[in-house]
Length: 555
Image (cartoon, rainbow, N blue to C red):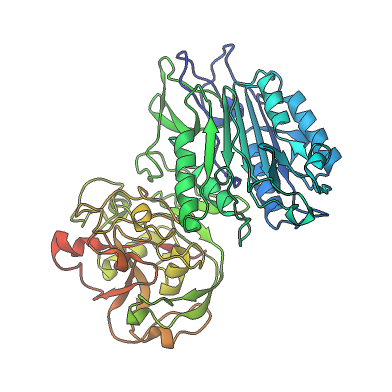
């Protein structure tokens, strides 16, 4: 399942030396149009999005409608023509048959066909079936009358003339009719052969079951929704990263899976550089290495650019994520919805100052998507104090708390409203909105953090490890991040419940997140560090160069 995104989905391929425009009209995106027979115009990409939840004879599902609506919004924003104009939800047998028939008719002669299904699914005798809300199956012979065979969709795709076909099934749940007498069906969905030009993605492996999820979306939806937006990832990379993240979230219990017979290199998102100007291109459609003066290239993954022209401030909004970019520095911010969570460490490996675990409520706030970079610091301060002067996209390091406050003061003099995060805000954001995560993004430290076990004794460019569930990078490792609070060993015994901040205990200021030079314990979400506010750190490359910052925007 896939979350709605402000950016553009690309399914691109290298073929025949021609540039193909996305599903949405290229001119709308600032991309040069090629007037040739291979131009992909609006309407060349068709999607059917289905979400079934309100089942009458089996257990209803909580998240299927949420996931389907998010997916429909995403595909529509990318230029897809949606069958029915929106997500098709809570369909009985008659309704499900009708929309699939309409889908088969609509995709004829199109380039890209995309089916997304969220709901109950079952395999019977090795065939996979989508389950209408009206279904009541008590024996195998009922399947062909009560359920919808997914092979029908594959048949429609195979005769439609489409070049790229994608099926995403978040339907790998337990047999819902088991207590009604439908036995011997096996768990989850069966593996299917992908016809030429087709990719079939499952929320979990063949014969396995997947979770509906405890939050608003399933684990698979959350991961795919986040990773699909990263530029320069081929479709294989996207689903590989989704698999890794879902396994982390579920402790290895759920392993996503796919099968494909794609004959072209397919991307979800990439950039087009035209005569020196970098533009984001999107919408599924084959792309290639064009003739001069156009040049297709892949953007550095998720790194903030200090070279591109800064546009006026803008807020990008989706149903689950809002982002904002500062016009002065290019710093990107993610909106963190307020909430209540358990702050601190409640497990057996806690450091004393991270206890007791206690309930805290924070208001919503904007926080930096990345640590402040050397290029951003240079723009404001006119210098670079970092020990590791390797490039603008590296985090600024060797920064004292007082230096951080001066940076903020100068930035605010240009019309900004920035500050350091409180310790409670920092931990809430690091935990992907207060989730019980050990590291900022899950339980696998190597996937989310640069620390002494993998850093090679150096900082690394921001955004080169996996983000957490809010799309925030490097909250574990790389460089420490100063907080507004005064450090107090006993702060957790003194915190007020709402928006706590410590102003007692001494003169040291709080540091969170650990750094490239510290071990895995130090880069956990709950670990509390501290240092003199005037110190740039001790030990040069062996410690002090780990002091950095991340900002909060207050309006």
